[in-house]
Length: 185
Image (cartoon, rainbow, N blue to C red; front, side):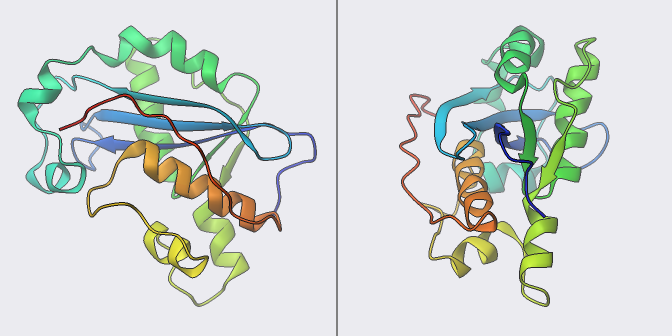
């Protein structure tokens, strides 16, 4: 499964307070890719979720409730995020989860999801390599990539999923040249 030719994509990832419908996004990382699937922009934001993180979620992303409480609410950045996604296919590794979480944040802000087309690198990887493990860590390891630390950062995970998208389109992995000025610890 490939993106239609001439399509721009935004590969994104969320870190959250947990996995339930009541949980909230605490961090969004996104990499905008041009029609050649080369990175042209990144977006990395952290939000006050208005609720405590599940201890398991905090262990995954490493952000404390105290740190998150000092951040702006999602609604503060909703228009900026919508503009970043405008006109692009939304892509994520395990899109069903990230779509549900980010879509709920847009709903709370009174806005529709800012994309109409979607692509899931997890589902595409399963078709590409049937029978193999398809989680982000396993899939990226299969193409010689890995995360920088045990913590999951939304921007790093989005960049790794962008690399998988390139591989799934018959392209080599390459440097993403991500600039992340946010100090999340």
